[in-house]
Image (cartoon, rainbow, N blue to C red; front, side):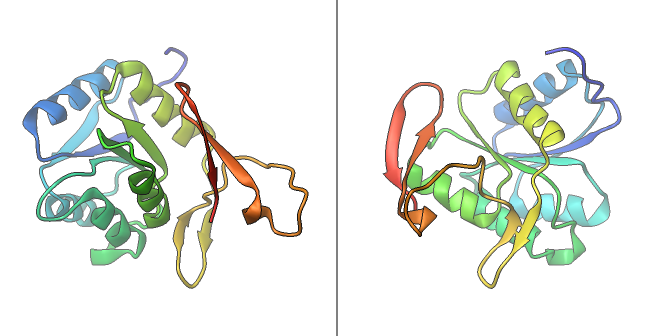
Length: 177
């Protein structure tokens, strides 16, 4: 986890649980980040984002009264004048495909499953820094391009092909809609 100087990047950590904010803050400081701000709610995050620019947002999904997915949707529409292009990493213990798809469809940049580690946080941040994805705007979506890699397909409709979601632990075949 060397070779990067994150000291000039700013990060907003959004989580309603103090232990998780503390853990992420400690990991980010260990990785070399010095400009770390915290919010305990989606509204607090929007306040922070409307007052200052940050380079990366790391948000929990399960928060009240606003979930992480709701926060992402508001950021992507530029609510309160926030930068809709800011990379967003969602952190969640819930790794059901329905949540991951909902986060993807809301415009998340990266997804990080709990329990977190310094290595996994570093990998997601490195992905954001090394491989910034172009943003796509359609009538129903605005956010980073959801396509991760080019895949050959045999039919006239790429979406009819099965897609392999591989998180490193198991292989799951699902039909992409």
